[in-house]
Image (spheres, rainbow over the protein chains, first blue to last red):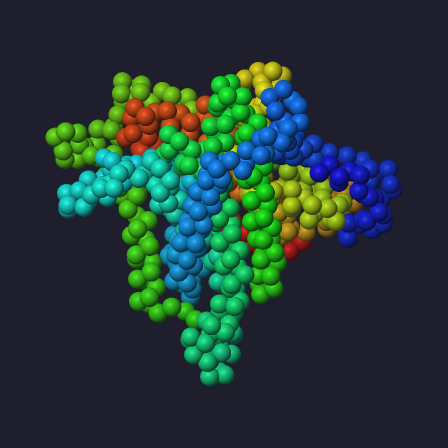
Length: 304
Length: 263
C-alpha cells in the first residue's frame, strides 16, 4: 500500500499542468504521499495481517495449522452457521422492508419535509448499532420492559417459551432496527435513478403498471437491490456492540467467539484461535464485498 | 410507477409506528414510577442534581475521554487526509482509484477483526507513549476514513483545484499559502462534514475501546447500565437526540453547496 511512491510520479502530469515537472520535483511530491501511506500500513494493513497471521502460529511462535484446523471444529462451524443465518435473515427482511419504504417515497419531493425527516432518521438509526441499541431493546422488550409488561397486562406473555432476548434469536429485532434504515439510505438513490421517461415509454407503448415493474423496474433495480442486500449482510455479519451488550453468557456468533478467545488468552492459551476466527470472517467478508463490487458495477450502468 | 397516496401512507405508517415503539418505549421506561406506579420525572432530574449525579461519574469520565478521542481523531484525520487528497488530485490523478480503494477498505474489514491485530500493536504503543486514552484515536482515524474520504472527495470534485492552484502560484504564492489560503477555504464544507461525521462515529465507538481495555463513553455506559438501567437509557435518548441534530447540521452543510464555477 506504500506503492504510490514507487509508481512513476513524474511521468504522468496532472491534466492542468503546462509541462511535465522535472523528475526531481516529482519524487519530492511523491514523498508527500508517504505519511498517509505509512499510516495506512501501520493502522490498517498491519493489524489485518497480524489478525489473520496469528492464526497460523501457536503460543510459542512456531508455525502451526492447528488453529486454522479449529475452524472445522463443530462448535466453531455451528457459530459460523449461526452468524450466517442471523445475517441472512436480517439482511433479507431488512432489504425487503427497506425497499418498500423507498418505494413509498418515490414521487415525494427530495427537499420536502417528509424526505428530510426520513433521511435524517435513517442516518441516525443506521448508525445506532451498538451498546445503546441493546439498552433500548432491554428497556422495551426486556423481562421488565415497557412493552413486555403492557402485553402481559393484556394476557400475552412474549417469553412463555423462555427469555430469548439475551440469546441468538434476541438479536434479530435489534439488528432489523439498524438494517432497515441502512437499506433506505443505500437503495433510495437507485430507485430515484428510475427515469420518468421509461414509465412514459411504457405507457405510450400500451404497457400497464404491472408490465412497467416486471419488464423495466425490477430488471433495472435488481443489481442495486442485491448489492444493498449484500451490504446489509456484511453489516450484520461484522456487528459486535449490540450482541456484546445483550449476550453475556455463551458466544452464539463469531464476533462474540473472538471476544471469548481474546479475553481467555491467559487461561487457555487460545489467543491464536482469535486469529483463525478472524481469518474465517475476512474470507466471508471478501466474498460478500467482492460480489457487492461486481453488482455495483452492473448497477451503475443505469445511473449515468 | 409512483405509489398511490393510500399505499404510501400505509407503508410509511406501519414501518414508522414499528420504529417509534422502541423510542417511545424508552421514554416511558425512564418515566416509570417505582413500586407505587405512575409516572415520575425523578430520574431525569437526578441527572442535574450534583448529589444524585455521583452515580454517573464513570459516564462523565467516559464522555470526557470520548471528547479527547473526538478531538485527536478529527485533527489527525484532517492532517493526514487533506494534504494527501489534494496532492493526489493535483499531481497523481492516476492514483485516485487506489486512494479510494484504500480509504473505503475499512468498511470491508470488521472492527472485531482489526482489533485482534491491533492488540499487539497497542501493547507496543502503550510502552512507547504510556497508556493515555489519546492513542486509541490513532486507530479511530482508520474507522472514520471511509466517511471522511467521501465527504472531502465530494467537495474536491466540485471545486476546480487545478485552476485555483495555478492562479495562486502564478500570482507568486508559495505552496503553504496556496494550501491554507486558497484550497482549504474552498473545501470548508467538505472538511466540516468530514469532521462532523467523525464526531458521530467516535462517540458511538465500542468495539476497539472495549477489547483494548480503554474507557470511553460506550464502555462506561455499559458498566453503569448494570447497576442503573434507567440512567443508561436516559443517556441513550440524549445521544439519539444529539445524533439527530448533528445529522440535520450535516445535511444543511451538504445542501448549502452552491454550484461554483472557477472564480
